[in-house]
Length: 170
Image 1 (cartoon, rainbow, N blue to C red):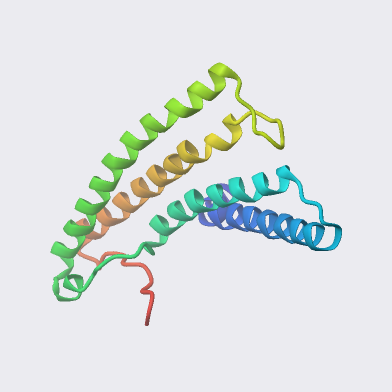
Image 2: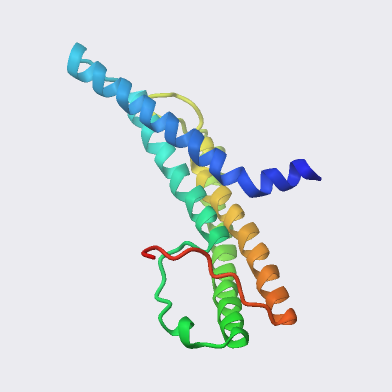
């Protein structure tokens, strides 16, 4: 159980670190190759592009977990705990509904790519691996939204202050 808890707490951090390091190293190698050897590769640009896409979707899930998305929360400072929790629950439910629809529709591109066997130009591997960034991201987002909803419902039931995450400019 301890392993699952550690994965739950740090999964996005480790994935973000992995993709970010891969992006930076590949970009550095490509800049050196271009400047010193007047040569660059197609595969380097593809790795950077697809790493960035995975970074964005994993980062969105991490932001939901920490309630770190950019939001206008001026009114939240004036609300008592119960209405504040209800407002956060409403927002999570709306996001959950949108995420489920987006997850459903994001599989269409993956399905078409798998059906026709499309491959990337430089790496020559199946585009399915890269198109899966969107459904994988929405799956993580849905998981984090469910956790957020449970956390908010618990706060509402017990009367505790709802988790608001960290503010950006404090």
